[in-house]
Amino acid sequence: MRPFAYERATDVRDAIERVVGDPEAVFLAGGTNLVDHMKLGVRAPERLVDVRRVAFGGVEERPHGGVRIGAGVSNGELAAHPVIREGYPALSRALLAGASGQLRNLATTGGNLLQRTRCVYYQDATTPCNKRDPGSGCSALTGYTRYHAILGASDECVAVHPSDMAVALVALDAVVEVAGPQGSRELAVADLFRSPGNEPQRDTVLDHGELITAVLLPELPLARRSTYLKIRDRASYAFALVSIAAGVELDASGRIAALRIALGGVAHRPWRALRAEAALRGTVPHADAFSAAADAELADARPLADNGFKVPMARRAVIDVLTRLTERP
Ligand code: SF4
Image (cartoon, helix red, strand yellow):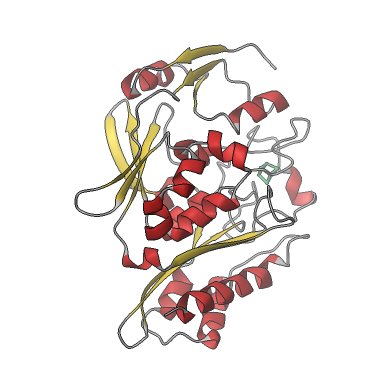
């Protein structure tokens, strides 16, 4: 590990000022991803600005509906919070599907969103990787691709986003509150993440020195009828091969009045299944309709050498989750 400076920020403004003018400075929150990468030699920031003692706020119901989640709230606390468990079960389930109990107690809401891919080549500093070392090449294109993308990839990167929480937040129409040197802004979690294109080194649209201060959950009737399914190689402490977060609202006649679906483990960003949603909105729930909607969503899938199984796996996950959500009274 290379030497680095460590500083503790007193508040949001102080944290931003310490990072924005120094290209070698990064924010440190729970450290569950960044510190691993420093040990592996994947990343070598010269200055860590610790934001763990910054007062971002807790889990607070908003006066006009919805919930504000401070960026420093731990994944464990968020998963167990009664407001989240009852009002946004997809989010609680996604958090509990991620990592281990110890890691969830340390990892933060803001840090979870900014964790980096677990592509084995990205994490092996001896191999070419455009995300770690732009222009060096992509080892996965000729390597082992069981865990890689089937949707939205580019010739420069076929990695997937590792966060379970982010998939649930995209399905729940969540928004991130971001503070930066020019002030604060809000953007949909779905717009926070990037497709790899020809800049795979950039996972998000955030600029250097911008800090996530909160996640905002809207008041959303379908959120109460939502869930998260994660399919992985072992029962715990494994990243998704395929995952799905979905929420459904039925009208009085039993038709689908509203729904939102996001897929994980399939793309560089949580994949909002807009085609499937459009195909099902206003219809009577039925397995054939779910199957056709999944096929429409996956029509552009481009599996790699080792991950062709992800297409039927994602298809069955969509059918299974929508069937369960629409069968409940
Ligand atoms: Fe790097 Fe992306 Fe290729 Fe993995 S898939 S080796 S992260 S460029």
